[in-house]
Image (cartoon, rainbow, N blue to C red; front, side, top):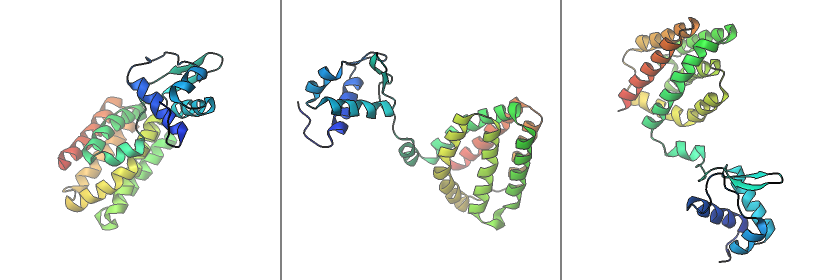
Length: 223
């Protein structure tokens, strides 16, 4: 049936995606050509090309020069920002555990002297930004330390994932600390220092464990 609502390219992309989701084409399968798809969708070939470009941008299709268009995913992932906006803070902390414990282990193996100095600076700044500095300042200083750990892992994907959490995490942490202040700030800071020491000592096992334990205790406070 012809697609009547504008924009036609968006409608054509949705129709193609629905056919992929339904199993009409399997992963890795080549799509029919534009001359076949255009009359099926009730649009022109240029609209089909734009729809394919849209789905290629979303990782569902891939155009291969001289070979055609192939299915590279069976669904389009939801936008990352939308996922984070909907996620509850416990889910974010659980994801942080997975990301940061691995990042801590990698940091212990890969950190440079300059990165170790950066970790020490951010830890000192975190210690200076205690409760008297305000909740926002404390959360920002804490985040900067954890970001320095992730940076020392030398893994761009882990860093990008962590950075994606920051806006969602910041406000939630401020609100949580307002309702449930840290009972033992000195002990909490010591836990961060122990993590830095493990990274400094190239102890990947201890670094991963300390990172996981710290974030797991945070999760327990939220439960």
